[in-house]
Image (cartoon, rainbow, N blue to C red; front, top):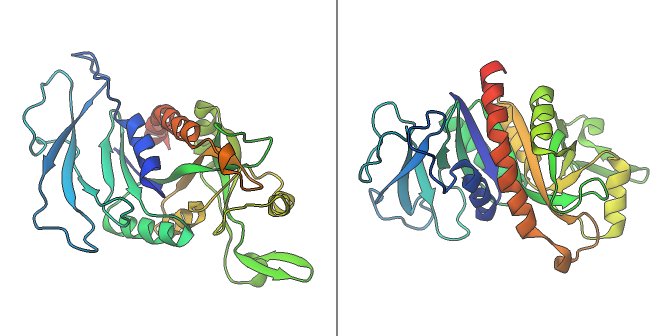
Length: 295
């Protein structure tokens, strides 16, 4: 089974993704091609205190739909199980929330917090404690216009740290020019192409920034420096750095909530972006099933 770690910044993004991976409508009885997630809830072994990563715990198991679900409890032999950590609103650093999916792919969805540092730390911790075959950085972000309008999807063919470098009198220098590291990670080209086709998404570089663009001048500067850029977000490069450290391939998917440029909260379409993220992950599952079989 292909084990996929999905990394998001905030709970709303994780909820949008898990909605796609565990649909509310049950499959028809006896359908062998679909499995039904069964959720069993249990109290934590000890009370959660300040900084405790889990306030409640649960187990998600897959079971064939022809077999009726029993009372909440541990999954049976052969089921895929893992803990779900749920903290207080805004809590970060818990264990992955797990959704089991039919076919050859299992997903774990992890909320790490905002920004490349939190993303790198959270992803590296997860990769150090369990084996994964693929990491997906996913969530909402800003789109460079007109290529990536609000409500659309972007699949990264390059994950770029857009502000990791130095300003000089002659312009910006990326960290490579300083001799101190790298500012670009490249996802697997075949997976990127297949995912973008299935999701009807733009294939383009996704820029990682520590400060979200809020002016026309900054948007123009980034577009001039990265003319193919499709989206801007805050976590992708941190996730990719952690994945590279563990030699795990990475993918980045962004649903566009706003245009990169002057900050205009009235124009944000976060609901549309989250809906696109849900729809996109529903279409991603068969792509990963095929990639897991032949990748």
